[in-house]
Length: 238
Image (tube, rainbow, N blue to C red):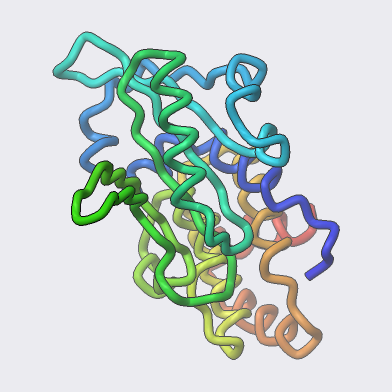
């Protein structure tokens, strides 16, 4: 994969377009509790001074409202394209700064999209002095390389369709994952623009060699006519 790919920009574009669907995928209880008509993406200029210089363009901060509560809260979504041993400290630091500025509850999510390592990313930051625990801060980790793409073969969630391309995939299954994504995209209730956005995301993260392309083409040829037409349109648009 080319080193010049801007992973943060690709993920930010996808997650901005399908934020509710992403929440339904990774935090269904939270998604269900939110008011559907209150979703405000904070302008990056209002919070970038709180983040590290290399993260100022990457993170999403979204204001939401719960059905059963009149006050708003913020969801902070941090994308990690590479493993980082300082993730726990940074997640706490951003939480504290956002909480201090906005005086609202913060729900923090770290989305880890790297292929390696496979070990679980830290999901808490602890501060201890002698035998005392001074602080335990927890946040949600969504680690794609620990998620099995086969679990989403019947999904209608557009965020899941896209993120299948970064889940745990055996090298021999790369073309199968791409074929599954295309089939699901063809049947999903999406606009042409939305399909192309997800299709291009999948194409970036699942480039195929000639043998894999041939296997994909053979799979596409067996699809029902209406599904095949949509798939071919997507492939042509790339």
